[in-house]
Length: 231
Length: 399
Image: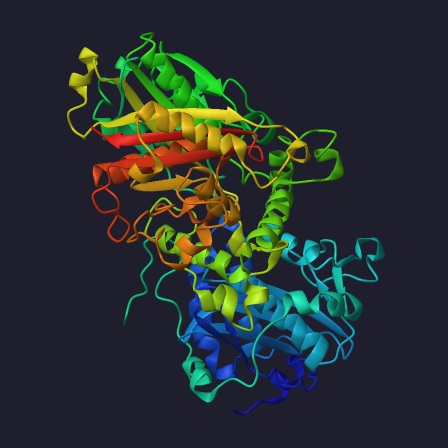
């Protein structure tokens, strides 16, 4: 792709991010979920997955889906700096997506967690994977986090015991909307890691191959009656 | 004493129904029961409504629920009262309804149990249920029902050698049934590898109250269930020709000390045993006559302990029944065919009514494919209030 001079000026400066090594998690259903970073050429299937959830008001899927759609698109079009996206896929089908980015080499900015397949704590596992990437593979010092739904607040702020940095505004403020920022420090992460983060590495090549060609789900538990057309 | 038959049943799905209000969901289940009994047009033959609910006042800031339900489903001038007996409210309401008919006071009664628990956060819900504990000796020490479930499980495991793997087998069996029940909160099966065997299991099936894990606990659910009862000798039985009437053949209840630490042996669930003995005596049956059972299992350890107290096998022996598959849907004595509280969910006020809904459905032969018990004659339900301090047992039978 030829990038003209003006386009170069529009793009943010990028840090080189280490890749997230894939892992596999056996869910309570016995299904194997491959957790891996997505490639830019997989943007289409991500957008296709997210799009139907933009109309679901329940559990704040609408706001999370709309924002995540823009984050994925922003990443694809080079409008967000240092972003990475991780998916959980079961037999190629996307079960959940997380988005995040690095502010600098020390601070991570957690963006969104969206679970398509519900009831198996997939969101919790993908959020944990996102934190694992920030604090273990990218070796950052802390991650800034906000919640946009009560489920998120319970899962992150309470279950992880995040540090509330609401009093430090505006010195510490998350990019999403100005709501109180919470921080996952390396110290907190190390204290909860063994209860929150799981997954087996390296992934058996045969299992990893089940997530080679990502597919958008045909059905959504959040949208009764939804059937993706097979055009 | 007059004979009493179940002539109509209704149920909502259990799960997150917080977009509705409490009386809405009770209305849905009640209307479902009216349709099942085929008396929507003739609904005014119902003379009395008993509503089972534990937390309307605390969780939903709503009182006078029984009269509100009667008005919502256009049953005035039927008499209406609320029955509150903690998580055993449902079976207690059935017992009161049964007594109202058996005494000759009325001929046709509706019993509707419902609870809306997901309007508050999980920990507020847990705190609400903990209000049934002794306020000074238990609640003030921050004891909760899951804490009691964990302590009970640990003690049971130490005494009887029960292993975590065997507890996981109960959850797998319950979820297998729940996955086939369209009313269940969790309609997702789980596997032994997923919740116990894999190297990820300790996290995907995380610890809640040692040794009980996520899959050892019921979900917090909203939901409602409803029954219509009629005196068998009443001329009003002529209205109920559409479905086979199922008899309430035995009811028994008993209490135990409010504080668990006042019991000589905390593993002995005396109220369960006494309640069951009364129900068997009333029905003229023994444990051997029971074809299947719905046992109150907000913590899966209770399915095992209750199955022993009601006399299905000796104390500490339920693990053998589990290992041999006796309690599976195709076993000799299927337990929690609905998925139990573990998979179906536990909207506390609805639970006892939902258990009898399941007994009726099974006895009629109407359970969904894959979870119908073969030729059942008698079903038994145990609805367990407090931590075993107020327990109601109901036996239903084919005529």
